[in-house]
Amino acid sequence: MWVSILVILYRTFIPFTIFRWPLGANGYHFFDKFFDTYYLFFEFLVALKWTNALARRTATGLFILRFSGAVLFELTKIRWLFVFAPNIFENFYLFYTIAKKWTRFETTSAKKLVIVLLIVGIPKIIQEYLMHFVYVDQTWNFIRDTFFWWLY
Image: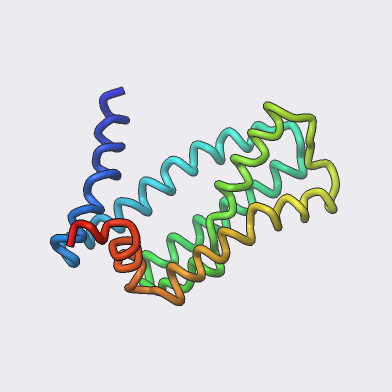
């Protein structure tokens, strides 16, 4: 439990240091991606146990896509790779898990799968495009100027 609290505190407060030291928190980005991949791996392990083969194969493909993109980014530092390897896996995992628990919806056909992927994928692709292609070094500036203007 205390490890979870430390990770939450770390991931919550370290990014705020960017406002004071814009380059001082660069190491945070590596740890942020590492921890994202770390917890996504556990979601992936759960998805491997899904009885719905279509959902399980889709989750596997989406996880491999994101993992490959994260590894390639760490090796090349080419940010726009995330546009081609967006984290649709997490959104799909959450959608499927919630739908399975609280509704009767089931991803049983290719048509339903395409609809779900469009619903969970398009917003994520747009987000990745804006963060890693359009506003490459300006994302934190946008967040700072929009939400934390009162600090400056």
